[in-house]
Image 1 (cartoon, rainbow, N blue to C red):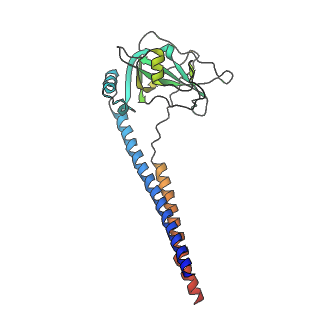
Image 2 (image 1 turned 60 degrees about the vertical axis):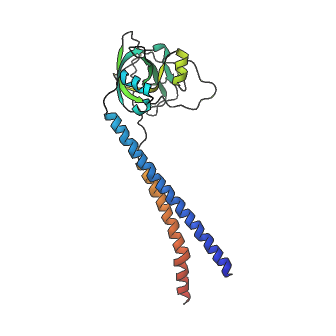
Image 3 (image 1 turned 180 degrees about the horizontal axis):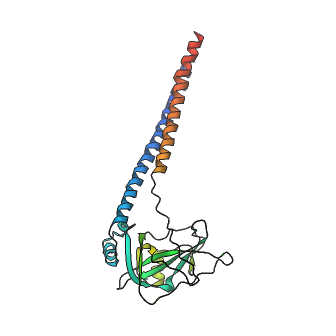
Length: 251
């Protein structure tokens, strides 16, 4: 009987140690994630405050293979729209409304690679989801301002990719091949100048910021540490305090 009791006690102790250790380790992992997010937050802030980039800096970074290090930097570019290559990305809600993100390649003044520009968001018509707004065209060069960003996020897509103006996703390599147009592997989220369609719809540019808030991970860490403390408290209570109280009551 004593041997069986001892085995049970060791089993309970081992289980408690595993539970306490696992939850404490998860809490430490969340603290590490919070530290990573703080570092990323600072990095994005530093990039946002850095000098504005132009075509020359982008081409130099592309030649060195360091374009990804420029994500978040402000750009000011002059070029021409490749209007016939405009794509309307479907299923891209903004502020709770269904609509499209308008993406058009911007051609540089010289012979360099073009850049996809996320020009803004327009709502989708409720009566005809295939109806598209008419963008104003210009044969003159345009000047735009914005921030460098990765290409638009990829959504789940049934079947082969669409080839018309309305698409679920856009892939720079595929667009480059389709239009025989060299493209840089980034995009620009345009912020200025203001732009509207022929129907008078303003292209909205309420771009969602990168999720880098460390507070969420701090909250998760507190929860894991609290759960670890609960396991420790239960172990101490049932293995030490409660048996001692029972022995004292019998005396």
